[in-house]
Image (cartoon, rainbow, N blue to C red; front, side):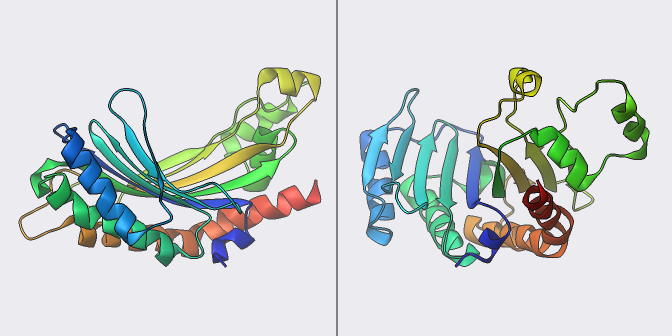
Length: 247
């Protein structure tokens, strides 16, 4: 079982490679790339084209898990929802990164950015913005605002972005997304919407000579997992889980 699933309702590990130049869109290149992916992951069996030259190969949605790989004009994406483990998700993402230089002719120079994202969804019927404020707290400068007569938190999605090196090439961002509307807060009628927590670790600029996409993705994934294990579980995920349980 995915250990992170013990703290939330759904988890996912996503990878995105954004390129400087357009990704090859020829029939032969696209189909060859997805055929190679399918050989390694046969459960990815549904291929279809979206609008604007976007193509996707995905598995059937069942049992709460879901995997897909997509090509867009300037982006390659891979996603695993509710994986059995973080390492299982990385097998798919690394396979994609191993194939793109050969199947899609994406050079190490063609990297605008490469990122790994870990997401955590909490299903909560209620004011998710107030939930976040209660679970995570407000900065002291904002606390008195809640004392205003008739006040309710309408929007609270804190975020922080950090650079992890002197050149600002490796960065991380922690963000939250609530899905309440003003009508729901006014009426008190809430659906079972999901509150999302995102941790993104991203590398900017071209790879250096001797670097490759697989190793760089593994480096970013290691940073991402360390932050989740050492910071997010105790300071974000558990407080959210515990606050929801008390509601």
